[in-house]
Amino acid sequence: MPFITGSDAKEVQTILNKLPRNVKLLYFTQELECQYCRETRQLMEELKELGNGKIALEIYNFVNDKGQVSKYKIDKIPAIAISVDDTDYGIRYYGIPSGYEFSSLMEDIQEISKGEPSLSEETRKQVQKITQPLHLQVFVTPTCPYCPNAVLLAHKLAMLNENITADMVEATEFPHLAMRYNVRGVPRTIIGEDHAIEGALPEANFVQKVMEAYNEMYPSN
Image 1: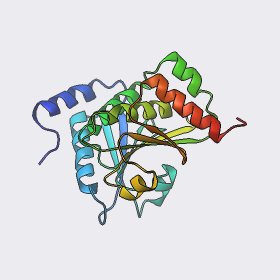
Image 2 (image 1 turned 45 degrees about the horizontal axis):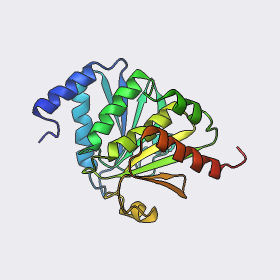
Image 3 (image 1 turned 90 degrees about the horizontal axis):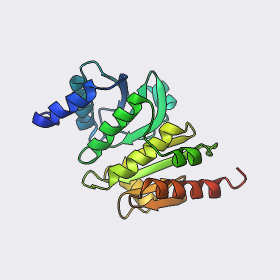
């Protein structure tokens, strides 16, 4: 049974058909011992079908396709990376982007297609100061209505600065990570290993927290 049906399918099709540049979804999976891998693959295939040529889909085996796994630094599955013209923007989805997170994926596809994230000038000014590697992990659940805002902000920062990588991590699919990073509520954004943002913040506040953490991580920068 399809995940995207009826009026939702028509809306998705309309959005995808208006994309200014074609988008490639890179999906990493394996046959065994992977919760939601099959469902995530089906969702990716439906997006490709609804895209009418605007969405390309490449599927890689987490065990066998070591070259691509290494290139995109995939460390768990199911995983999705998004690119345009073979440009990797450092955006990752770990776990199925279902529920409210489907809207994050659709928004990301549109942002990456146009090539310019919608962020304020002040945010752009601040984020350009990041010259060292910075990893953001946004822990979410599909039923959290506030999570997409945090995911999209983190992903937009990754689009803006190649030193930033940003992951959506579905907490219930990766409970060991949720425990490791003390995720008791979502969204919870982990900056590096030792800093965190609780909840969904407005853009300016989110960026301020990211910059504070970055400056603590790289005090001489």
